Picture 1 (cartoon, helix red, strand yellow):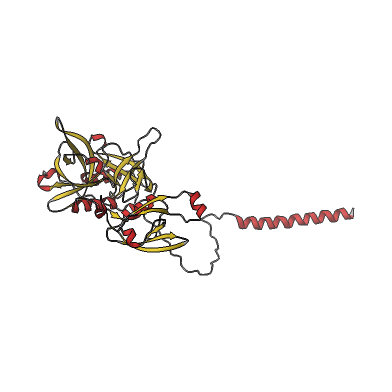
Picture 2 (cartoon, rainbow, N blue to C red):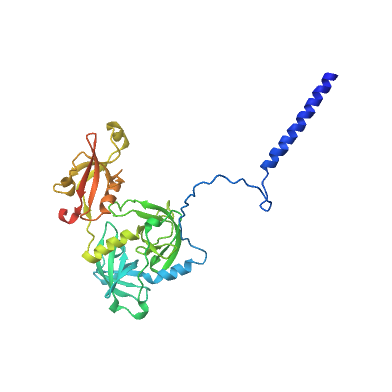
Length: 373
């Protein structure tokens, strides 16, 4: 009996102690009301941490009409006429963006496929009022053309405005954009979407001096050559291609504006876009070949054009091109982009792999004019 009482007393004592401990711990874990006074122990002083924030301009409800209003007089309708046995007739319509002006004229960027094959061209802010324009030149690989609209031909009420342009490198995936153009030939219209991806390569534009912006904003026939616009009302791209298929929906592409302007300006000044030339024929290697020969990832040089920049710089048949400047080259598309996006006369370091050695070769790029057949 005495033994039993001792056990009971011990258990009672333990329960009391446990209850006190639990109460203390529970009290320490309680979420304190924001209005309750709390005592906070001040930590030791630490160096201030610099916080870097990034400012993004986004569309707010009600802002889209203002953005459209700011850009509408910079996007024109482009009409192409062709000669036929029955005379001259309208063959197609598209869009264009006013990107520059001088004392004599306004200059318009549009797509090469919009004006290709045309004999006469007319542009205007509306279908009702069109003015003759001169085609200064086009570049099919880049799908860019430049038109000239004389100021002396314009009526005061129809004078366009040079578009404000932005930098496509500031775009981020998910950002809201507007596609402005002459959809289906019905006149100016606007569609809204987001930036779906950046830096895209697509089949049929492998020789372009840029990588495309992908968007789900509707780019319909007639929208080609129109503007892709950000929330600040800046043109960040030139609408160019829509993939049309029963299996594909909401996939359109735009040319980055900074690349489009560079090409359009070259055409305005020279009548054509002088493309840089390296002088190699290359092919991609599959991973099994790379693994078998323990090669690094690059493109294989099958042929070097005599007296070309590549030959002058020391590139040889059998080399693997690994890098152009600081950019890795993993396939043919990478090589084309890195060469064509640079300027004629520019010196670039090309890294090659040759007989288990990595070499850095300085190469001065030339114009392809001298190497045309």
